[in-house]
Length: 300
Ligand SMILES: Cc1cc2nc3c(=O)[nH]c(=O)nc-3n(C[C@H](O)[C@H](O)[C@H](O)COP(=O)(O)OP(=O)(O)OC[C@H]3O[C@@H](n4cnc5c(N)ncnc54)[C@H](O)[C@@H]3O)c2cc1C
Image (cartoon, rainbow, N blue to C red; front, side, top):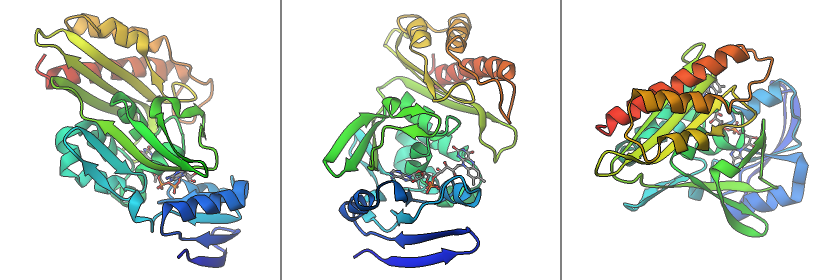
């Protein structure tokens, strides 16, 4: 049974109805019923800021935090499923994620403060769709897929295809159910690096990479993903990946890949965090450092 609380919240200056559905189908029905008037709320660390700043005035809030199916970390030896309402703190503390999908933990630890990570969810970090979010680059570097639920059932979408612009996604009155990640192949090294003005701030630039070597130490597969203020969405640099794949990796090859990656940056002219010139230069440095770290971790 969903709980309905009619509330006028003076602190938030916004009059809304609040629902707490206990299963996914109830939540989806509410989204269908109220359409654009409704907003899903998970940890609220992004949404409540938007309401307070009067960027949005939803008439209906649908909390997903009482839906048990959205709070899970399940691993079967080949694949990891993380429920969208799982908090960053739960991810950080998960042994199975730390040991087998270390890149996700590495990115989660970089997000905000302990207090924020106790509330913030992985689904909220993805669905808010700011280009500076920390989890999406790491998840794209691991080829994550999203399970999305709407009135017409469930669909699966690669995370890489989910973002269409700043704070714009392919969700259509739908709910993100879970994030699915396959175990990285053997001989894979990963790394996530973030540069921010303070340890609690959103990224100026962040970079997540994976390199997978074959038995001869040649790079078989690479992922190079950059977020932050380098474009309206994160960038997966296939050109940089091509530069790495089929080669024995060293500082020179990695430096060239980082340069190539930088050519894909589309920095906006104005930003509160840094100038476009700075972001381009620092972005290339971060990619290079992340690739060197990943190579070192895989013993290359
Ligand atoms: C002080 C502070 C520091 C922060 N630092 C960082 C940082 O360093 N790095 C970083 O990446 N972020 C940072 N953030 C942003 C924020 O904490 C994260 O983006 C967080 O993961 C959002 O999750 P949430 O559960 O709070 O989302 P909410 O605020 O509840 O929701 C965010 C958006 O996603 C939608 N949504 C949520 N869940 C779903 C779902 N399952 N399906 C569909 N739509 C959904 C909501 O409708 C809303 O539009 C910071 C925030 C604060 C307040």
